[in-house]
Image (cartoon, rainbow, N blue to C red):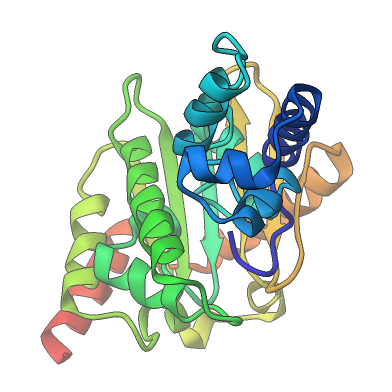
Length: 266
């Protein structure tokens, strides 16, 4: 969890329950800390939900406080979230998608990123993330790519502004990874060259998706704010904007040739 994200509700609830069990049993933080091999201040931060109550603490507390498995059972609900809090709702809906249309103006879409590219981008967050969080988010981002080959197949369309392809972290491996993804019959990759750019294409990234229940959602994101909405007016506006961008982009075949030339030029 970064300094920008609030502690998950599961941490706070579990910590509160842990404190209630401890105080009811008349056990001090020092005693619980000795049993769990943690300092009292660490126990305090876990009870306050600032830090994740660890399996080690929950198991030790369960035995010491005679909770009969009720505290140990919380281990499955307090595991560290691997995505920023503001992106978790979108990731949940993304897993339900039967079709997804994405436009990126500055970065390679998360579903199409290599390990090296994802690590470079995530490591560049400000304020900086600790290495453990970087590793967790890179692994989680790469796991998302299973959507490309999930069965039944998901219809996926990506449009990338040329600026995204010429970003600092884009290397031959990343470009070839895009070409490989474009070969999948359920995946379309298009490039919007600089000379075809227009105002609507410079307004930032967006994703449109449809769930198995045929619910249509739009997701837009900036550096500090993201919005996932099913409001028909908002979805319609994003659909119109994305339609204009796709119409101005190179065809999938032309886009592959464009990316291949970039590989040669590097």
